Each structure stands twice: as C-alpha cells, then as structure tokens.
Length: 112
Length: 113
Image (cartoon, rainbow over all chains, first blue to last red; front, side, top):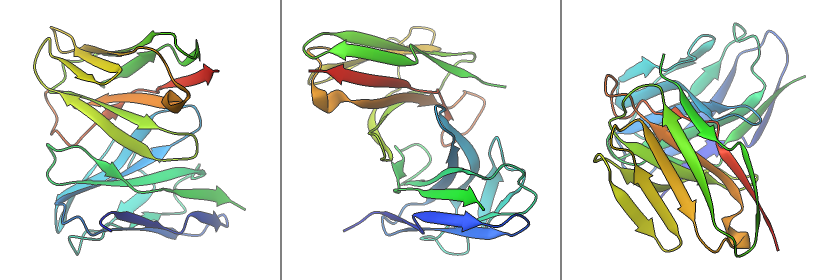
C-alpha cells in the first residue's frame, strides 16, 4: 500500500537528549511537512520541504532540525534546545505544495 | 502573523440535526482546505476551495469560501455518528507558498444518538 509511515508510534525522551522521529513515504511526493499538535489545538508547522535537499522553517522551528537527503524520507530531530517537546508529531506529504496533504499516523513524544 | 480562528470550539449535536462551523482568517488566503481528524487518528483531507465565493458539496457536507477569501464555513445536514471528530480549516496566506498552511484550532463534534 502507498502511504506515509511514521515511527515509532510512542517515544520517550530523557531531558537533555536529542531524539529523531522517522517519516517515510512511498507516494512519490515532492513535498513533505512536519507538524506539532498539542491537546485542543490545531496543527503548527515546524518545517517543510518542497524538494530534495531543500527545506524551510515553519512557524515553530526553534529546537528542531530536519534533513531531506532522499525524496521519500524527512526525519525530524527534536533537540535538547526544545524546552517543551511533549506533543503529538505529525508528518505529511503532498504531490506538490499545491496539492492536498496526506498525513501519517503520528508519533507521541513524552519526557521522562 | 496570520491567524486562523474557528468557532465554535465544541459542537454537541443530536443525531439527525444540522450544524455549521465557521473559519475566519486574519489575512487573505490563496485557498482554504478542510480536514477531519477522528479521535486518536490523523487529519484526513476533505476538500479544497480556491475561488472567491466557491461552494462545494460532498453528500451531507457543504463547504463555502467567502467572497473576500478570508472566511469559510462547513455545514453538515442530518448529522450521523460517523461525523464525530474534529474538523480543521487551513489555508496559506497569499504572501506564503501554498504548502505553508495555517491551521485553525478545530471544531470538535460530538454526536448524541
């Protein structure tokens, strides 16, 4: 099946550690996105990439980093600089930036 | 910066009733998109409106994009239990690329049988 795979589903982090969330798509989409969702709130854009080897900051990029070395992969690193990382992280992709976004099942990150 | 607001935040509906949820942006949008997120799930794309004043229907759902391209509405008729979930509107400001969506906080819909 074509789709977006996020792993792991649940992730626990100790304070001071960096963690990397995986996002893989086999839809042959050019654009990929990372969002953060907090309870009772909408999605906030962290980073997005319109093409391989290029990405732009979203509204809340501080404390996060990404890479886009392959078309199908867009990993997100939550660094120790992110002071409040506990949230639900959603990865999405679209054929082009003008097309609807398809979301993965998300990763729930918690601080131990 | 651009803000997208949705009202109401919560909507309790008796099965069979109609309701409307509203979306307002502080800036003009290139397009408006609606997504539905079931409890414990991920957002799923419903529809995209691009033209000023555009109206689109999907079975019992009617979507409208305002003339000024700053507001939108979603009207559901004869609500069913399958309509439960949170409905988000999202859109890029005309000054941003289309991929840079600003999401509203959503309307959480609860249906009483």
